[in-house]
Length: 395
Image (cartoon, rainbow, N blue to C red; front, side, top):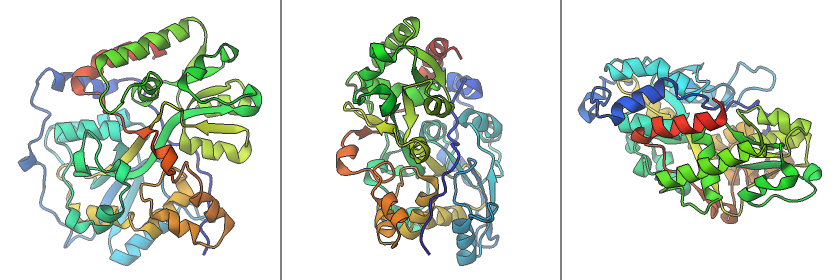
């Protein structure tokens, strides 16, 4: 059966305020020890061998569904049939900080969250790893992860070797623009500041989503950026706000602005542009010459999960290239299983073949050379940096 692409609605919502995450980040940065959980206190008795189920919290519209019956999730149903494990799948994550606020009281107080598996952005995963709120996965149960995980995603600064996190989907933060309306190509971050784009440029509102690409425009190695690098970017953005170059700061609503022509160029996510191009082929996505940020949203097992082995088994199932290909054909983000490309290429239909050749799903070597994973904002930096960025962005 040929794999089909169903253009999903955008669901990568953005950080708008520091919220409860900032409050906790400030406490831990001041040395308050209560939030940190030591390795020996993270595991509960695992019921997986006798209780064939697990609870999985994910974002909306972030898994394949059936064309005719959207309530069905084919890859998940296949896992249940193959393993006998029943999965309670809940689309309850709409914002990283909102979800953080929901489950942090339990994790801080050494209580189970009621979830065996969650999907959060890597900058939030970094916070969980630092706080000791997630469990190390048993790679002996995950041969597919060991074999097929994208080498470029294997060892982020916050989780060397991916001991605690496994990418669910990945993506690129770059620049989207309407080539017909601009009448020229955009190739560099500095092109956003061209005079003919004045008042028709948007940046992402969330600090964690926005800063890395802007630093790359300054030639910064975002795997090891400094406070000076951050404040330099803020100075530049503040200047562009004052001169009227930047129309506004956005969440995913940049999609509407770009489609209508109100905006000519903006910070954007690769997966969104694949969707936009289906309706308007003049919209382009560019990885700037200076580079772009490669990010991931990752599967993690929170402390005191009661079905850890079942969760590890499900994670590994999605790293089977056949399964990863089916998922990639639906969500259209960067697939963390490069071997899925060959599955799509050999599927025998034009649609799957086109997906296999799409560098925004399977980046080629040249594009990969310009992608980097940013180091996260540390807890002792978050309140100060967040306060400055939010002031500039009007949050």
